[in-house]
Structures are given as structure tokens and as C-alpha cells.
Image (cartoon, rainbow, N blue to C red; front, side, top):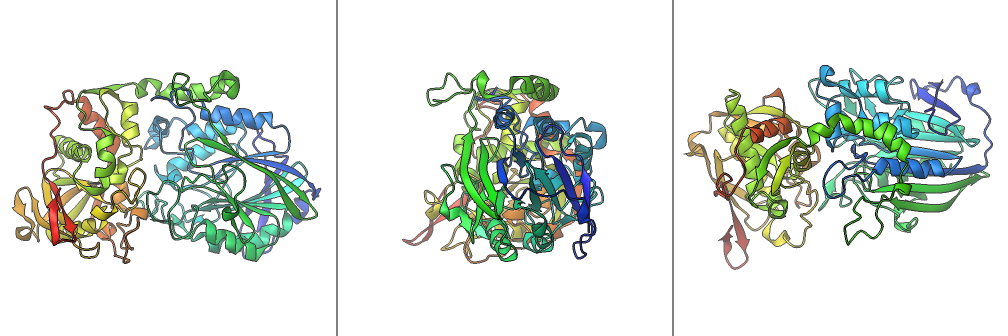
Length: 614
């Protein structure tokens, strides 16, 4: 194991920077290159997480909100002795993702990494969404646009990402005379591994990786920052974007407790992944585990976190903790008492760095796909139905992708779509490419999965166990991310879900495909359209043989979609929906069918079994 000095981001405030590189089981051999520490000093840490390319709002009621430029101004106004950090998931969420493309020829730039470099970000960590478009394009973006180190101690085996060149497990930054150690950790539950383009990419459990590097790093530094893109909680936990219990695997609680046993050096855990707002009004005691405080700033550039600390005699004093809200560009809105003004953001940075990035996609963002006059596709109606019942919006998307692939000459039978994929509605008015991104923000390609009739019957039985049950409506928040993996289908597949008395007994009945009962087609092989996310096992939504998440009791084993034969078409799910919309007439009450009974839910009644039918 060796230290290697590299140039820090010239726009940041790190004086000298060193990466740890090599075998963590061996001793560091060149400690003499580290400068002497002052051992006493003040450090102001600015941090954000899960920005998801929301540099500026490009559409909707908050268009013109300059989120990252507001952060840059606050950091630059803070003066000396500052670290500016991202805790991962810098990608996936806006039209800016298209600048990365889906292959080398389509790559233009990495928008967040380019903006971070110019804005003075000192380090980031690999989040799960960094891998959405494959590790090859991630490596290309890092090498072209990242002027700062990217950390992860538990990602390994990649064919394209080179440890020591593209990322490192840990680093030491000298800031204001203090040696600051930084370790990156990536969620091992929801990172896309097993993809054809990088089959050996893997993510180890974070605590084991922490135990390898923290004992080596701690004696060399004055303060340690664990940059954890693993999630607030541990195992099955409700927080942040989760509407109910979400399985995040080994995460921040376990990491903090493990770190406390390894070292008594001052240590902070900067978190991410669960989109949790922590310590909004100062450090809260419930966010301190075995003396280790945990921080997180929600997501999408809604807040910038600030932690002001002093180090003296190997002790840390936390002076202040803030979450600075990003002001919105909604001057005309009655509910926005503190709107963005030109004084809130760095206008030169916005004009010279962010706006040129936005200009690449501005025209594409406004491309009109269709006109909508019906209310049937509104998110107000779909927000509950995605987890509970037949949904006009889900029907429309499933039918559209099925029709599109048939038009392209692909022999497919039907489509399946997990409800949590739908993050917005198709509202009345002109519907643009930017609006479609709000509906389908995830980076998914189209897989064709081969399923026998017998396997389909088992899949639908697993789906019945995932439904938001009648007695949960009103008790479980359905407005956010409910990690059960409940999915919808195109019209060729029809069936009924019997809720029964509990989830374990819930089942699927009266299944037909193209009008024929499934019992007559058990040996037939169907070609089913799925997204990348489902074909790879649904990760936290548990189409991977692990117990169904999202608060479903009983440790019910989810069906493992990964074992089914599949083919990646190379087509992008959202792009094919856009092509379908562009080729169709306006979406009206006449062209968008209402509910057609492809999914019927028989709700359980304590008065006598399943009686109520939706």
C-alpha cells in the first residue's frame, strides 16, 4: 500500500492531496511524503448528495432555479479552510443525462462532473446511479471531466474502471493545516452489477471494506470523513424517499457503529442514497451512533449541508450544523416566501459553466412529442394505482412500449413495468421530451425476457404478494418510493389478484394471455418486455429471490427474474416511448382508453373473505 500525491481540483481549497493505492493488507511504505499536520484548526465542510444532474431546473414551475450555482456561491463566500464534497448519485434524473449517451459515439460530456470541477468540488463518491449507463461511459466521463478524486473502498472487479486512475478507496487532503482522511463507500444492494458490458463488476459489503482501510488511515489524519452512499438506516429501514420499509442492506448505522470500534479519532459520516433530510435545525441526538454523527441533505439539490468543526488535541468540537435551503425561481407563487434572486447564485459561474452545458439539451428538452387533452394520464390518479390497482397511466406506457417494439418488427407477447418507475404524470397541454423525463427519469434499456407459462403464473403470484393491500391504504404513504416491485402489464395479459387474509396467502387467478387461460399455455414460452432494472433483479424491489421489501411481512421470497433467459435489445425505454408518442395522434378521451379490467383486485373483507372488487 502506497500514498500517491495528485493535484487537487485547482478550483477547490485542498492544499495537497494523496490517494491510498495498493493492497490494504500491506503496510504503507512511503509515509514520509505527508507534510506535517498542525493538529489544530478549523474546517468548514459543505456537502450535498443525490444531485442527480439537477444543476439547474430546466422545465416546470421552478424553471430557472440555479441549484448548483447557489451552492457554489455559498462555498466561495465562506472563505478559507473549506471542503466541498458530493456524496454520490451525481447522475440520472434530468435531460442532461443524454449528454453521456448510451455508447462511446454518443458521449458528449459528463455534465455534473464538468460543473463540479469548475465549481470547486474537492471529492465525490461512487453512488449506485453512477453505473446506470455502464462503467465504460462512467470511466470516460471521469477521465474527461472530473478534476477531483472519486472514492469507493468497496467497488472492485470492473473491466473499465481502473483503481488508482478513475477512483480510489480513500484519500488524505491537507486543508488549512489539517490532515483530513476520506473513505468512500457504495451501496452493495442497489448498484447495477452483472451487466453484460462489465460482468465482473462487484460491490462488497461496506463494513468489511471500512475495516480494511480505516485502521490504516486513522493514524495518519486529524479528522476522518466517511463518505457513505449506502443509506440512512441499516437493513430494512424506513427513511427518505421510501414510502414504507425499504431494504438498503448494510448501511450507515452499521458503518457508524463499526467505525467507533476501530478508532477514537474525530469522525463524521456524510451520507446519501435514501434521500433523507437530517439535522435541518442543528445536529440531532438521534443521528449520532456510538458518538459518530450522521449527516444527509435529502436530494436533487434541495439543500446544501454545512458542518463547521474545530480540531484541537485530537478532539473535535462541532461548532455549527446547517442545511441551507436552495431558493426556488418562483417569484409569482404565493407559497414561496423566499424566492431566488440574482444575489443568491454565482451569475458568472452560471453563465460561463452551467448555461453552456444546458444549451446542449435546451432544444431537445422543448421538443414537442404530442398534445394531451385527457385527464386520464394525470399523476393524481396514478400515484396510488401504481402500487395498488390497474392504472390508466401504467396501461398506456405498457401498451405503448409493446406496440412500439411490434412496429419495429420484434416478436414480443406483452410488457411488464414496475409501478415505481412512474415518477410523474402526463398532464394536459403540450407534452415535451422534458416532460417525459419527469415521468420516466430512470436510465433503462429494453430487455426481452423469455418466460414459460408456468413461470409467468409464479411471477404473478409473487406480484400479488407485493400489492398495497386494502388495509394499508391510508396507513402506508403511497406518494413516494414504495420498494415492493409491484408491476403492471400491457393489455395482452389479464388476471385477478385475490388479496386473501394476508400477503402470504394473496395470489393471482383467472390468468389469460391473448385470451387463452394460462393453464392451457404452461409450456409455451412468452417473450416479455422488461426494463434493465427488472431484468437484473429489481435490486431493492426484490425480483431477485430475496424477501420482498417495502414492509411486506413474513420474509416472503420474491421471484428471481435474473434466472430467466434475456436479451438486451440496446433500445432505450424512454426513447422508444418518445418515438411512439411522436407517431401518434393527440392523446384525448377518445384515443386513451379508460381502465379495461386487465387487472382486477378482489379486496379481502373481514366479514367474509374477498368480496369487494375494484
